[in-house]
Image (cartoon, rainbow, N blue to C red; front, side, top):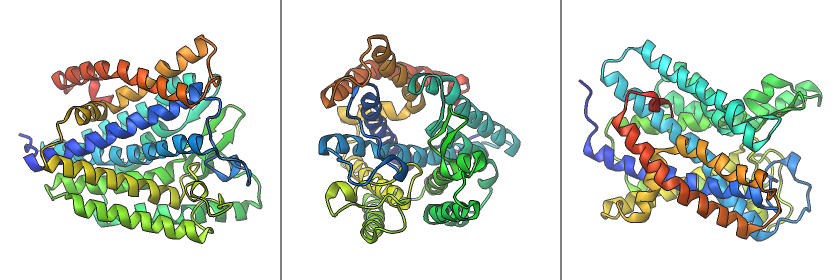
Length: 378
């Protein structure tokens, strides 16, 4: 018989679901901008930005607030998978069955990129981004889940800090020549065979899953997760971001500051995710989680807005797969892509969320009623 989840753990998972729901809503803003906003900025890498290029504040901040999404999503995927494996082990499930489940889900996520996501984001091309990063990280976790928490934390932090150095070393060895597909899939990303776009190389994103897995083990053991230590962790991460961005050398994949303006300080490399990007976004995520934990401790966790966040957070993959055609198909069908501004971005976001909320509630109810069905994978 499975060991029941302690009430304290359940209450902490509410805040985690709410955080996941928050980033899903922010993600919708970014993708609505990609569909309708003529001024949508994608300058989040040294190769995508020419020094001195104007970064309009409204457009920049609209894009910037959505940077919270992918790191938090991958980190929380690690938390969720860790908790799932812990529950299965306590229920007496064999390691082979657990590995089969992880492999099946990981491969499904990877296949969804060319078979579903790419059809809407980049018609005629194949884009490997967040689902690829999570799916590949799942495959790595089949072996890494057997490693101690300390080693997982060390490996996650090591990749975060040294991935840029490794990429630089590989470029040096190659003499400036293209690094090739294996390096692109694992570390650098890039464009290959004219129609393959690797936006999320797996190793930098695996580091976030490793850190999330460590937190999942912490929660699975019934250990406390209090607002103040979580906030302190977030503040420490933001301190590392400020230090590295202030030095303006290593830590942002050669995307250096043009000046001392706020926009330039916040202009961090997402492709691939840099040390400054990861510390900034995880720091902000930790502060958001601390606030949600504090609200839960005060009995405010079931307020109407937080219930909406929780619904989206508990149906994250379902939400993700539906919101893409919901945003992009009308833009293509009506010839509206990239024709408007921020107003259309936020209007499309609001309409999409209104449509998605009842669908996500129904899906969550179905999933709850069929815990052993196909919904385990979505």
